[in-house]
Image (cartoon, rainbow, N blue to C red; front, side, top):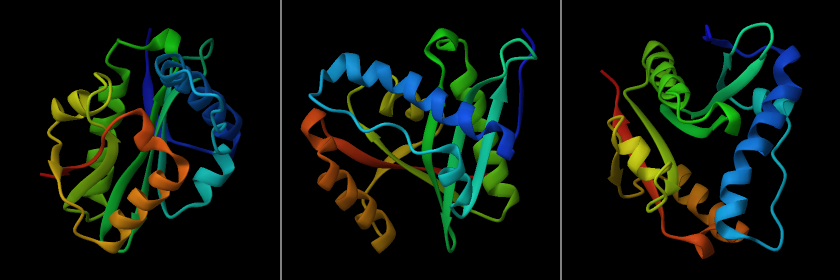
Length: 168
């Protein structure tokens, strides 16, 4: 299957939301929460400062994954990475992370951060293999992200952490 990564367009917004809801099923299955918030709309993601890249699996597959990076002044933060479950474990997530790092660097950012679960194999260990290391929150932006996670109850499912990759 030929795949390609490109900037998202408004025509991708519905697929982006569907991909995230599909990918979230892995966490729902792992945690068995009483309630899980549905994914934000693709349009709401696209409206945030930053960029949104999609991974296409050809005409028959359409959008099978995406990466959303938000920017806040000089900061670039990988807000969401999602790949459809039926396309997982094929390197698509890694390709999307690599593309996000290149795009962030091309836009003048020196680092890319993200928040994730420390002990879930497809979270922190996945990102560590791609050059991300755990760091302390040094900015108000990152502290606010942690506070939002706290309000949403995400730490109930395991330790959350901030990771950063230096963009070369």
